[in-house]
Image (tube, rainbow, N blue to C red; front, top):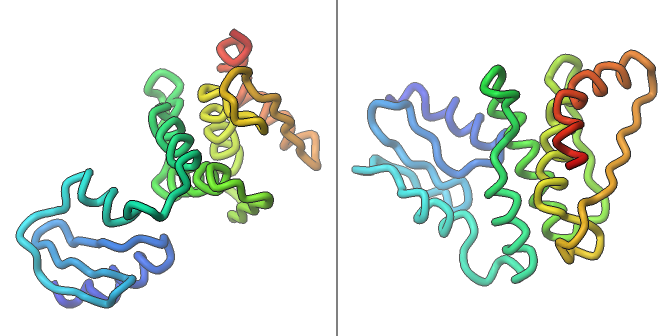
Length: 169
C-alpha cells in the first residue's frame, strides 16, 4: 500500500483533491493539513461535502447556485456516453467559479480530451438551472459558442444538435 502513496499524492495535487485510496485499505491523506494514515471507513457524502466546503466558506447565493448545478444530472445521450473523470472535474470547477461570480474562467486541455463535451455539459447545466447574469432563475440564458475553425464549429453543432430541441423547450 505504501508504494502508491506518492502516486496518490501526485494525482490528488493535480486534480485538486484531498482524499485518495488504493481501493483495498483506506489510507487518508489530507492535502491541506498534511495529516495522513489508515482510516476505518470512507467519509460519507455529507461528511466529505462538509470537509470540502466548511460552513461559512460560501456566500449564501453561491451555495444556492452550487446546489442547483449539482442537482442537474450530466447529459449522457440516453446512456450512450459518459464523461471522463477529468471532464466532470472541469465542469464542476467551472460551474463553481460561476457560482462565486468569477469574471474570467480559462479551461486549457490538450487535443482530444473532450473540450466540446465539457462545453456542452456546462451549457446544459446553465440552461437547465436557468442561470443568467441577473441570477434570478426566471429566464434561460443565451449561450454563444464560438469556434475558430469550421470543423470545430461543425463538431460542436453535431454534439449539441441532438439536444438542441430540448434546449429550446
